[in-house]
Image (tube, rainbow, N blue to C red; front, side):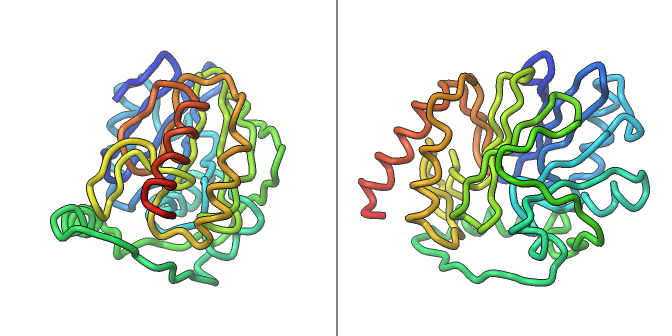
Length: 241
């Protein structure tokens, strides 16, 4: 799906992956689930690209539903995978977290689990090698992505600002579709290690001039960064989070 001149999405509102397309090649933001691989290949072909044009994968954090095909890209095509240093061990499968699920509804939760199952979510291959990044880094990749530390969902959660795509990729720092309840609109994401820290971290995004706020779960948001942060804060207050 093409969102803009340099911006594409694969996956769905349940689990999403983004591609930044420039003359220098393609940067992949998050790697979804292993079963998104055919969609990646098909979208690249539709863009007039191939896997050989992918210069790097940048992970917003190290959870299994964000690293899906990253190791395959690295192993088969030599693509480097970037992740914040604090989430490197998580991406390599060396540590895991067990955050509370919180409130849920049977229908949306079942759809999330079924989607993950169909997309080989139980067959995620941990990464063998990562390139560690830090808050403030500007990466030498297509779109010159800038790293913004957003600890809370995980210790190494980050946002990635790519001006050429007019976008900030936020991973699970927020969601626009709660996978466990089906609620839509900007709101705190489930499975968060430290919800209070995640809310505080979001304010680091305020003032960024970008139309698109792109989460790992939910519809693309195109009403600007500050409004997304405001709505997440309001949703958290309404729910007592």
